[in-house]
Length: 442
Ligand code: GUN
Ligand code: ZN
Image 1 (cartoon, rainbow, N blue to C red):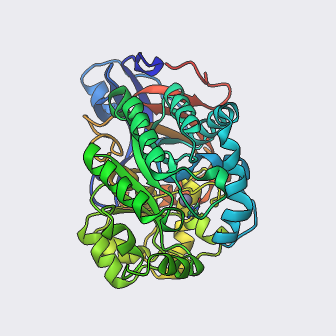
Image 2 (image 1 turned 30 degrees about the vertical axis):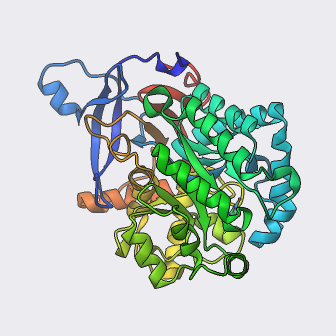
Image 3 (image 1 turned 180 degrees about the vertical axis):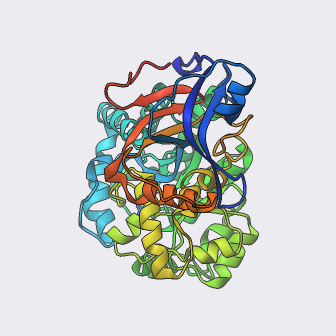
């Protein structure tokens, strides 16, 4: 039994931002009580006044001045790049060669991998991330160590061994058959673990590091076992040229994955900076999801994903930190960068809509829309509580939408004014700021 399967019913009270399940909007409850049962699912989300009106006891306000919202969903992050954040050797292909591949080679050492996995999980939690889509290294041992740490820390995640059988130093390459066998064994051990909290995800790095045979085998494995697929696409112009040369029969970058059985409703595509209108149309028709990684795109000078192309086609979009090209584990930071990027690409999304992508949008993009990302009965109690300075005044007479936009702007842009206080997954406390009972697991 996983340590995290020991759970108790509980409740928190305070201001709550509740996402609409489908539209990029929120409802604001000024004084809400959120209750969950032993299984960790929310059983009630209601105003304190309604609780009081029934004569029921009211819990004390959990963190005065703070706001509760669904835990952040990081739809794209690299565990073995935790130690190389800010390694300024870009653009993409030279950064991979000079910074990423040498570091990822160190994950052949299981003990090193286990140490970094612990730090990685701590970083996710301290930024309020409760669910993440994670690339491991190409090593089965490191990937197992990652799952063990995720399990221990109570995080929700999909993670995969990064598939590479060409285009990198030998120490990182694993022949297709051996790699896919290792994926099968990892899926046997971890996929669906703890009632679906952990999932194994088929993770070909990108076309340039996989032969067609490995990509085809990855597609087959995902289909046979109903697994999700995550990969990179169309991030950088030099990468596009090299991919076209490596796959001369493919009509464009998307076709590399499309032709080899990797494009479907369980596919999560990272970056999507340079896709053509035809690629956007086909991606949308396949009901694939995308992960927008604006901070990484800035750091590597890749360009920016045209968010309006995705949202205009009702493509599911989540935000990704993309650590280590992204410089922060914070999805609040990712939302702020997405705002900056949307000014450049002409997408008209404000802070509230981008905060929605960082929570509910990510849940939908990763196939967890029925589980998390809403504060309503039936959804699991994956929660983050973020402090805001008590002396930040709100003008009188604002509408609810205006109040939501103001609160969202503060959450997205004013990170240095207030940090994460507490993080819960299925109701269990997974992280708390120092002095607030971190690790008690209540
Ligand atoms: N493309 C292939 N591998 C990577 C990676 O590790 N990071 C980013 N940003 N892009 C990639
Ligand atoms: Zn990435």
